[in-house]
Each structure stands twice: as structure tokens, then as C-alpha cells.
Length: 511
Image (cartoon, rainbow, N blue to C red; front, top):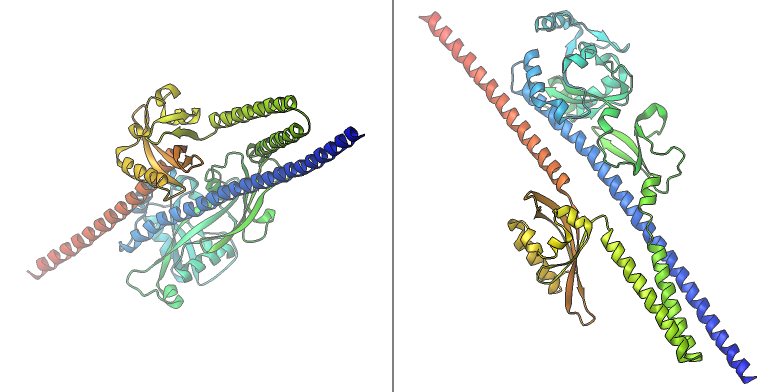
């Protein structure tokens, strides 16, 4: 009877422990799922932020290109068609400005001066020049496209009176009154045979020397606009390197309708996205509404086994605890069996860690306090170009660019001294082929229970492509600035030459 009661007590205690541990495991699993969901969402936000920044940067970059055209007009008494063609050709728009249809100039022309304007345009190496209206508006002043290059793909736009159509005229006058780059609402370019959604980017050109502080002064000083036409699809389709992670839609203004659709990239129309964000983006004195949605591939790719792994770990711990209880109630033999099972679980856990380390998509390494590689994964070997065997015979110092070594060593000393918990830094490694590899390095320090440093854990991401892209943009800006200086210098010399010729003629006539 006592034996049965002891057994009953055992099963009661064992059952309560089992229920408690089961509830704990479920709690840990749910929390880990929430953590994974949060991490996935933050990654989604990072991609959205990158694409948003890319759109803004491209628009600003194109705006800088148009400012160069404004500078050409400001530095000249007049700009001829061949001069404008040479300027646009020097910009290499197809190479440096992907998605743009061309760069042109729109002239303000009064009704009384139309015939003279057409005659001058024809005499300026374009005998077929004629004015065409795209709308029915009729004002005292017309806004006529005088130049656009390359003219071969934009010939339908030459002579177009954008002031005859409400949308284009509104944007042009908004740019005139604000003095800022302005984009139109959604339009169809006359030169686009496919009639896709497009827009114009306009920058006002004011007469040199006139004040432009107030709106009235700006209107009186207005000469015209430097502008660029775009097809929305061409402007946006290669701007965001999201592969197949995001569905991406851009709409004009705040209304998400097919009439306002500028560009749309849908990965899977039947998929109900886990994450989606809608934002209003201010661009060129206008507003675009952008909708980002996560794709199946993104959601599956970043759906890890971490929740299941944590459940297995907590379950292993539960089994271990239950084995202790069984030991107290039963006998030594049972304890030894449970200990063997716990050991097996531990080995399995270590094996999973090793697999996760080796198969990580970024470079992973364990590094000694002196800088020797202790353990490296395949991704790091691919980044540096060395085999695992070669790297384990080397130190990170021998592969670090000399200009970055002191800074890196100082950061590692701060880790050892406990001044920082971890650090993240961009640095250069020297590839096996002797070329420079830019990486983003994230380093933390592992200590024993007593606080003694054991080794470093380093994560390495290859950012060489991004650094090269940043450098290319910087060089393009420098080239544009140099070009503007050359054009201004050239015009000043022409003015001085003309002035010298006039003075000589005057002296000659006087004598």
C-alpha cells in the first residue's frame, strides 16, 4: 500500500513537472517565433528604406544634371542648338542617367512673337521646326520645347507647346514660382509609342542679373525651363535591387488607382503578403505614393528553424530535469540512461551549431586574441579567396590593408578591455589575387565565466560593389562640376574675344 502511494506521489510530482516544463517550452517557442517575426519585419523595413533612398537619390542625381543645363544658360548670352547638343552629348545620358529619355529646353514665347520664334528656330539648324499643341489651353504666353537631345528618339517633342495642356503647364508654373525642381503629375510622353505612364522633371531658368526673391520677381525674370522627360517604367525598373523579395508599386499623388499607376512589379499576384508598407514620398515638388509588399520567397527565405531549434533545446533541458527527478525517485541506473540521452542531445546541439556556422550566408570566423584564425566558414574563404587550410595558417593582420590595421587593432583592444561590448566597422582586406575587398565587419568577444577573454567571433559581409558604386557617383559629380567650369570659362573667353573685336573695330573706324 505504501509502495503504491509512493508511486502515486512520484507520478503526481512527475506529472506536475511535465506540465510545467511543457508550458515553458511552448512559451519559449512562442517568444522565439515573435522574435523571428520581428527580425524579418526589420529586414523588410531595411529593404524598404534602401529602395526609398534609391528613388530619392536618383531623382536628386538627375536634378543635378539639369542644374548643369541651367548653368550653361546662365553663363551664356544665348545657347544655340549645336551647343546644347554638345552639352548633352558630353553628359553621356545613356551611360550615366539610366531611364532618362533626354534633356531639353523649353522657351517662354509670347503670342505676338510666335512667328519670329519659329523663324529663328528653323534658321538654327532645324528647318522643319513647327509648333504643335497637345491641349486646348490658350494663354498670352506659350511654353514651347526648343531643344531636346538626343533628338532622334524625341523628335515628336520638338516644338511641342506644353503650355497648352493643364498638367504640364501647372508643373512648369509651379517650378517657376518656387524656383525648385518640379515633376508633373502622370502623363503620356508624345514620343513614347507605347503610351506608358510618364512624367517631366522641370528646372526654371531665370534671366541673368534679375532679382528672383519673390514670386512676382521670378515670373518677370523667367526665361524658360531645362527639363527631362521620363517613362516611369524606365526610371524605376532597375533602380531597386530587391531581386524577388518585394512587390513594388508606385502611384502618382495619394490615390492608389490604375489611373495613377506609374510603375508596378508584382512577384505573385495570388500571394497574400505578410508584410506591407505604404508611404507618401515627396519628390520634385510632388507626391508619389509607394506600396511595398513582401513576396513568398522573402518570407520563406527568412523563415528560419530558430523557433524549432529553441524548442528542441528547451525540450532537451526538460528531459534532463525529468531525468533528475526520476533519479531521485528511482535508482542510479535510470539516471545513467538519462545522462547518456542528455549527452546525445548536447552533441546534436553542437552539431547544429557547427552546421549553422559553416553554412551561414556571411563570412564567420573564430579568431584568437593574437589574431590567428581558429575556425572559418566557406563564405569567408570565398570572400578572401583562400582555402580553409590556408586561412588557418594565417592571421587576420596579414590580410588587413595596412591603412586599416591600427584602427582595427585599437577596436579589438577596446573589446578586450571591456570598453565596448562589440564593434562594427568597414575595412579592407587584401584578396589572395591581391585586389582590395571592402567588408563590413561585426566583432564580439567571448569570455569565460570568470570574465577572461577567450576568442573573438567575427561576421564579415562583402560590400565591395556598394563601395565602388559610391565612388562612381562621386566621380560623376566631380566630372559634371568640371564640365560646368569649362563651359563657363569658354563662354567668358568668347565674351572677352567679342569685346576685343568690337574695340578694335571702333579704333579702326576712329582712325
